[in-house]
Length: 241
Image (cartoon, rainbow, N blue to C red; front, side, top):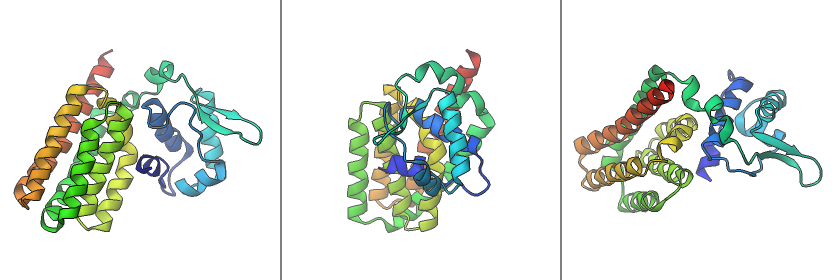
């Protein structure tokens, strides 16, 4: 699954266990990692995320202490996501530790990636690329849960980045989504925001289909700016409570 590829993507040599805890906590609280879902074992996690076994073990110990995962011993054992994590959402909610400046900066970075991807895609997308993107947006439109909406949205954004035919842009989009996905999953609890995002994607596809570069860039920018606006709005509402 694309979602899990992003969640467990390498985090870099300079990262520490607390960054792994933040990423996995966000994924659990927002439902991207579902209740009772088994995590990869320590060796696989260390390899997937590009860190040592000790770092993974420290992170998993913290997640257990926060009652986000539990361990089952035995032949079919391992680390599993706990069933009831919402009582910890106010403590570990991503908006607790992220500032509005951070969210604004994240949005600007994402806007740069997607708007430039759209610029290149408007020149390079084939009919097959456009058809695939329409299919992904149709899945997003039909999705009813925040988790399914987030997964569909990630596929749409990755498809746009991939259609730029720039491996570097596509890779940067994949890396950025490790932060982005757990945040927008909160936004996709709103049916109104979901509907607005689908409409923005539809406008973007129309521009890409027409190979209209300026409209493609404008619509891509509007899409990410809308996400960023709602992220900052939710942060301010969370801080006011």
